[in-house]
Amino acid sequence: MSVQEQNLQMADLLSAYFPKRREPSFAWGNVISMFQMLPGLRGFWPMSSVDSTPAVFDLSGQGRTLSRTNVTFQWIGLAPTGRWDVATTRYLYRASEAGLSISGIEGHVSVGYQGLTMGGWFNFDALGSLETVMSKWNGTGNQRSYFLQKLAADTIQFGVSLDGGAVNVSSITTTVATTASAWIFLAGRFRPATDVAVWINGNQATNAAAIVASIFASTTQFEIGRLGNAANYFTGYGSLCFLCAAALPDYMINLLFELSAPLFGVTP
Image 1 (tube, rainbow, N blue to C red):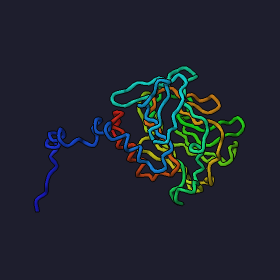
Image 2 (image 1 turned 180 degrees about the vertical axis):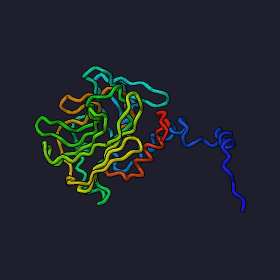
Image 3 (image 1 turned 60 degrees about the vertical axis):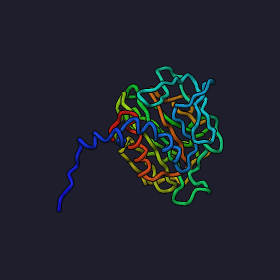
Image 4 (image 1 turned 90 degrees about the vertical axis):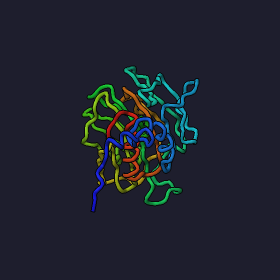
């Protein structure tokens, strides 16, 4: 029986007619629809659609436009990006509303699929400091719901709160370190009374010990680029940020990374 050998040269020659899966232009043409297809999507801010206000438009179709405080916008290669620089008053925000107050036990989501997933692509200017990339979390008045941040040790932490207070917080810190001035895909997922997980690119860490049953509906605003009490400011670039009222499966989160990675010059 004959064996067909892989002809890499032929594959390269045919790439003009059949785009490579790892081609940046292929990712550029498909990445928006991929994120719009996420189950339970509540907000998707790719940093591409910005109006004259300027405000950042939500491409989920649910109209959760983010207001801006000094964030600027540009592109790196084919990727639309927001730019958070060294100033301490740069962030995107939206007042609390029902669609952002995700409990993780929404009745319209089938049991087994309930939860919360959030994340996006980020590029940190430097290492060694605590920086929050996405949050609905404010310690003042015990208004804590959920957050995704880089610790001073340069690992990524995702957490949720049951009651808004300093206790009953489930969080997981990945042991994989971030890298300065490099694009990385970050995601956090909560599954009620089951586990919390965090991703850096294709690396996942999961904690299944003493996981809370739901997320507190805080009244603090949703923010990209800082924690709600005007702390832990993010410095760097962000793109393709999303929030879902569902626990996305591992394979779907990994596909988000793998299929969008070429847009940021990252090899899965």
